[in-house]
Length: 424
Image (cartoon, rainbow, N blue to C red; front, side, top):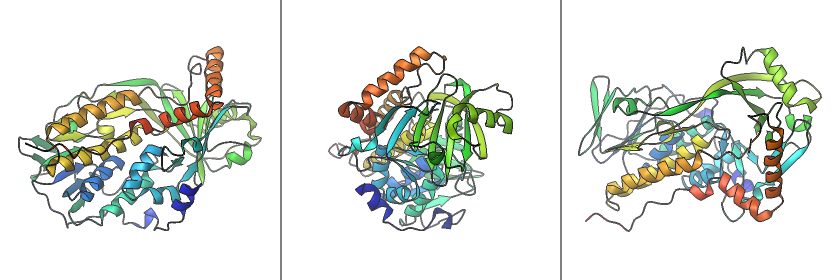
């Protein structure tokens, strides 16, 4: 694949070569600048979009360094296209696992359906997915920010309060206040900015949790023909398998009240039930679990404060939908803010952005490409019908192309801020 080969030809320093906590003081806060709270994928993406447009940016991150926790690990084609515009996609592709096909199979190893991502040729510069932890992206974004003099990244900076006024935003850090023209809140599901402004975040919790098992066993050797993204769909035990460089992640859904779900015995039992055809035990190198919930802010805008990523919405699904749409939020927020600050768009463009991004999230939330109908209810007839539908799609090139474009978020890619509307 030309796109993959071209990306892998680049040579860059490993993310770990960056200092654990980089502080820069070349930039300065100004009433023409923007404060970004949070140095995750969404926050750093927004900062980079603004910096490339010549807008002074200050990033405030409460932790002393970039997060290294294993979190979302799927980058979809639409997201890769956006990251390519920012100059960081090639490095991510080089380090990640290229996913060129998606597969559904049952516990017996029978392939129920399979789709090749090459069907997206012509719709995207990246007709594939990349499996790479989001912690591999943030150092690339931070390194890219180093090229801009009006950027100040402050680690170990906890936002204690936000006051939004008619001409700007004031942010309290300890006993001092910083000022800027606008603020982008990218500080996660427990957003301090959101709390400071008294905004509620309605959400609904799921009765199940995600249980993630890490293994360095070569699953594609133990299960011949296994795709790097495989959904095992069976009423007895389902899971999703994701290949990353050097390891696999196996994701289950378990009841919130399951006793000792991460005990060695329970993990071994789950793996035996889900993947009985491996022939030998799967070596577990780690496991974690996390709650699943959904929620969307009533508005992504509060005056001069814009909310992106987890601070604005939660979508708990396999496949990193929330991270991907958060990056999309950030790209479009940066574009619109740059246009407003530069006089190419009126302030009302911010309200249009907030409405548009929220409507996108409502369209994204129901998307479940795993087509798990029947699994949750242990209804074999419903599951069989869902898999028959997938086989029918996989057998039709045009239907496959439409399905994968939908799953890749290509129909929801942010457009550039309109430059034709000027302030009167």
